[in-house]
Image 1: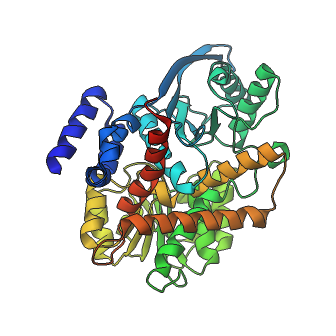
Image 2 (image 1 turned 120 degrees about the vertical axis):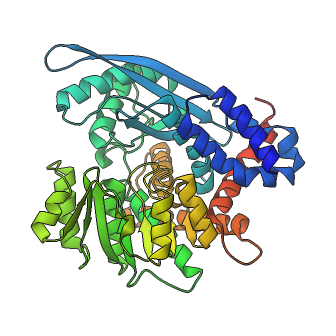
Length: 446
């Protein structure tokens, strides 16, 4: 089996040189899928996995725009349309200097499996630009978004490809992108999700990834007859996902000990309560401040340039960015008694970290399952747009809970091992794959 995996990865690497993030994502999935495919020759004979790792389409384009000084700036735009076997392409747009083709291919590849797990009819895609909206005026962000959409509009549509937000793309950016699409096409359609509620958005969408993450953790805990009450939780990040994961943990009776940003992390042994979390929300969302200001205000520890994984906890939720939790961090978590790690970010745990979790037989929930709540509610937004109708907050929240429960059931179905341990990584990969693979078989070699 190791030889088959090696041969497959060598072929993928040959075609995708200098794309480490994409190769890492493919390797992680292939480890689970190749043994399964060997037992199901119909997938092997039709080379389903070889087809899934190859994007159906990659679009790269220049984005010229004028800054407030009247100077021309040029960025690069991307859209990776990975797989449309079960529905139109669906996935976010990321505006950040770290955006490369490798990063977007990894995200699009993960998105294919994540969207499949939700049970909703959505294919997988991802896009973005190396543009950085930080420290830019609203006018500059608008001009960039309008130039970006002037090229992208011809490749997207409500039944073709429905982008959403991601890092650097919030309600402001979605508004400018949607306005330009509407202006060019002369139509009001559900071409983007993450819209403002007043003009076609869905309730619970900002909270969905963080809330869904905690709902998934609750399902994990139920397998051992446990709950979040009294559990010590460490969280990385302080953006949207981290904020709402912390909010839901607090509401469920857990004690949130840490949050972080690129400058370091805070450790509040008394626990971050709702009032203190509201301070963080205002600090990060309105003042664009740094998390160290929390430590100064509430007289707790700030660890500059460090990550929170050395703090003793029961549950760890990495919510910041890819590869933020390495092998040494994983060993520290296990030695300190952590029994559950669930990814709110995309691929935040390195392969060495995942191996350490699996060896210790603790619960490790990969992002494609645990953080699928965001795209699930994006899918619900698409449904509401098609219906020209809006569901209430409770209706959307209940649908989100049910989707996360169903994802958990699928992971258990394909991930339960002979000794009873649930390998969520294996379960998520196979569970997401089967639906896509059967659809591809049914549609022929296209």
